[in-house]
Length: 114
Ligand SMILES: N=c1c2ncn([C@@H]3O[C@H](COP(=O)(O)OP(=O)(O)OP(=O)(O)O)[C@@H](O)[C@H]3O)c2ncn1[C@@H]1O[C@H](COP(=O)(O)O)[C@@H](O)[C@H]1O
Image 1 (tube, rainbow, N blue to C red):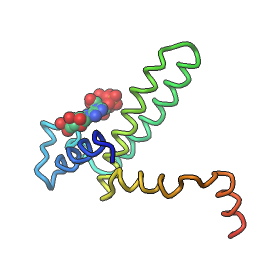
Image 2 (image 1 turned 120 degrees about the vertical axis):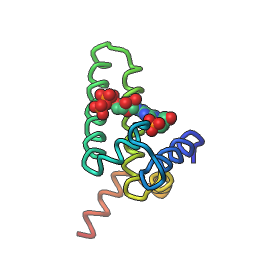
Image 3 (image 1 turned 90 degrees about the vertical axis):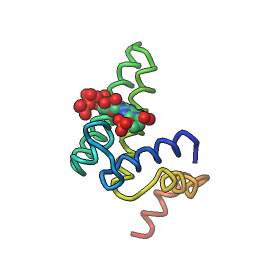
């Protein structure tokens, strides 16, 4: 796994309440303390903000906003993965599994098996 993903995933894991995370001192712990719904809501918000940043960039606003919002989205998605006992490696392995499989062919093969 990419080094920064590994380090951030490890910090996120350490912020779980069961691992001693303190919601008063840690943003990640405060989200874990709020639970599933709050984490899902944040992922939805960050996805929307990413789309808005892309729309702004189309209207000549700085492209850097897309990067900031995407970082927020990835970060909150990592908290969601951790909440469900998953890791960024699970996602990277899935991307690796899909490597070289055309999306169009994959969709067509799905239709054949229905
Ligand atoms: N990468 C991040 C990161 N990205 C974004 N955020 C926080 O995510 C929060 C939500 O972003 P928003 O733009 O929605 O801000 P907001 O409106 O204040 O949020 P809400 O109050 O509505 O939830 C902000 O407080 C950001 O600071 C992050 N907080 C932490 N990290 C990483 O997680 C580590 C652990 O953080 P703590 O658990 O806070 O110690 C840090 O060392 C960093 O490596």
